[in-house]
Image 1 (tube, rainbow, N blue to C red):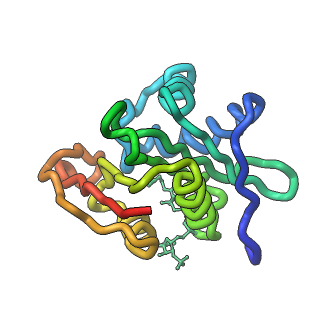
Image 2 (tube, helix red, strand yellow; image 1 turned 180 degrees about the vertical axis):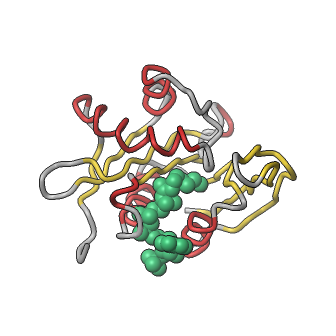
Length: 166
Ligand SMILES: CC(C)(COP(=O)(O)OP(=O)(O)OC[C@H]1O[C@@H](n2cnc3c(N)ncnc32)[C@H](O)[C@@H]1OP(=O)(O)O)[C@@H](O)C(=O)NCCC(=O)NCCS
């Protein structure tokens, strides 16, 4: 891909495309703590149904969903000025700048929405592509919770808590 994909707010009609992107990542189970056999309806609630969530999609020229992200308050009430975010790019679109374009849109959107910082609670330490991307965008690893993620290939590995101000 020579130019960054378009990133926009998700619409109801985008769900089938979002699920097509999410399902492979959830089934493989190497990057998120969702149950690997999660049902589509439960995934829809988990991705789009939390209070205050904003869901974005990256699309190609034909409107096909290439990746999706969501951001929301990391905590309610007194913690609601810190955003949490999640990202998944479909396997067909990996390594073409979609994740970076989604991340930039999420950072810009969260800042415009008034969040003061962004925190990732559970970045799997073996997910080198994601860790490198977040670090290149100004996130730092604050701590690593040891053996907090049961990786299907590597066994028990750490979960990074990553943070940056906005
Ligand atoms: C992490 C993820 C969102 C990155 O999306 P992507 O579209 O493949 O990433 P990009 O093409 O935008 O590349 C971003 C950076 O990743 C790194 N990267 C890309 N391909 C890589 C590869 N094959 N190996 C290692 N790092 C790689 C590079 O640092 C790249 O930076 P660059 O723009 O300077 O080249 C995507 O791999 C994904 O959805 N993974 C599964 C779910 C997941 O891990 N989500 C994040 C959980 S914290």
